[in-house]
Length: 235
Ligand code: ADP
Ligand code: MG
Image 1: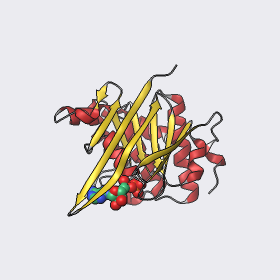
Image 2: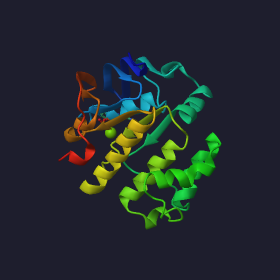
Image 3: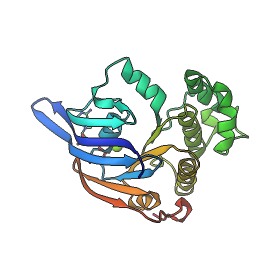
């Protein structure tokens, strides 16, 4: 039996907008097995980003619990929360969020410094196929290349969990496939656990498990015995 990497138990998040309470998450319960690639699928507004923020320790829930590895994330306060984010989670977002005045290598090394392995920046960039682009600035790179820098940046910390929020949402068709292949590869070759959210149903087919989110609730969970290689996905 595999261990559980992420456990969400009756997770709730409400936003107060004046008189109106927005129930972004209405009691989400699910588990992510260690080492798996799990896709959380839901339409726009279903609570995906809210959920990622709670799991990543960027926001605190209104109710319920989130556990990641040995951290009970939902009860952590600063400075433990910062330590958790720094040591345990890697983030990849729809927009790449690179520092424009730093080269690819410097962007990755900056985060590597926190973990004491900044010297691995070049090696990781080679790993994501950017060995020839180490000294390029973000503006000199295509969207897909920038996203690969962002993936290298998230991996240099050697995170336990990689969280992706629509990581291909801002990429063209072909480039999106390259980034998904890279994510699948890293998941297969290391013990990294990946949780990726998307509204694109086709992407679910590459996952070991798909969790369907609707209106702030988990409506279905499917295990995928034979995940499809990302190169074969069509949308
Ligand atoms: P998704 O990522 O699936 O598109 P979100 O998690 O961003 O969904 O949003 C879920 C719901 O919560 C939406 O109705 C959204 O408008 C609302 N919401 C998200 N963030 C906030 C916020 N900071 N304040 C108020 N409402 C929010
Ligand atoms: Mg979102």
